Length: 156
Length: 156
Image (tube, rainbow over all chains, first blue to last red; front, side, top):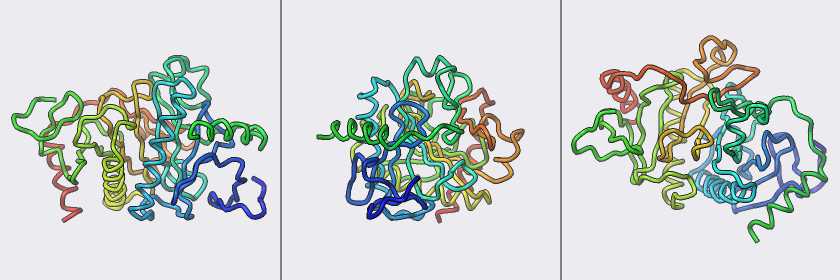
């Protein structure tokens, strides 16, 4: 990810382009995902660069999850999904690749769940998978900025 | 799961034996898992029977996740693990089988992550899986009560 001069948002070693950010709260921010597994797969992070979930304060924990809950409901509805997966991969042996706490929110649909071909490593009915960091092509900033713009409108 | 006369804790349609409960807070409770994927795989639930995460109040959300964070840190240390997976399968098309919000906490270790044979559907390095409801033999209440007793001691 390119460095963006003056961006306020860091995601581990990456400086985040503000066009990718679609929601902020006092202690957290939400971004669209450079490599999403499913439409509407977004991330919510604490503003403070903290590697492990246990290192968050109670206020940061509450802020992060109240925001994740609200965002999940909106992206589920927006993508006409019927379920959500919320996951923190917490630490290097859980599949975490960026050492900065982040909640994955993934909208899920009946069709996706039943049709394994659509799933790009995410899931199937009998053998639910959670491969959130499989090799996927990075999206362009223009694609991400457009998506973030749509999500911002959900909260206006 | 058998019905337990007078138990205060419900997990969806199941009445939970208090011997399975190892931690409570004003709005949440934590139980050992009848079919765990890995040692230390536990569940944290809101006391109120709520199906979807979006239906939790802000107070319930904070209480649930502050408790999950604290429990994760203790079970990770107790099981000499190095990472954790926190997941809510939220809704029927995310793999949720019990219609009552619950956070899965699963301690993860380098060995587990590298050795797929140990994983019982949970994970491997290249194709992280999240099959939290594969067919597994139910454990006995005696086994679960013993485990809950060990975890209670972590907080005393």
